[in-house]
Image 1: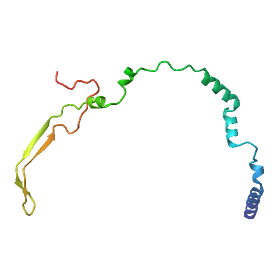
Image 2: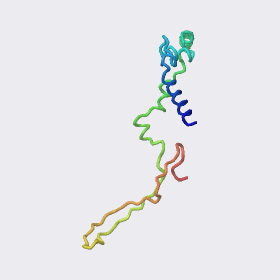
Image 3: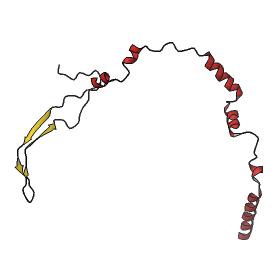
Image 4: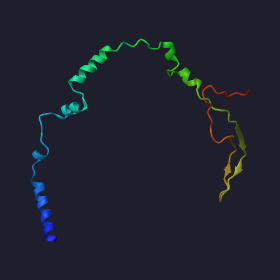
Length: 134
């Protein structure tokens, strides 16, 4: 039984290797582009329709004038206007007096000021949102 199975498998393998590439995958005279255009319907018939469609389009007459486009363009004035202003976040200014460091050998630390914002995250207003007090 085992030898019959091996013999059958060997025969199938030899038969599979004996077929030629031309029988399995015949080559034609068409190029890949021609086959693609034929299968997708983009042949010469469709090209005539595309050309007719592009010629029949009317020229665009609704182009906005310069005044309408001005609000959409980026310039220095528009950028500095800041469309999304920061919401007020008061700062706490603290002064640290001169002191000695807490290391093994105390070193003098000069006095300095530091700024701490009240809110940990910066919030931004939406366009048109009121940012001043009522």
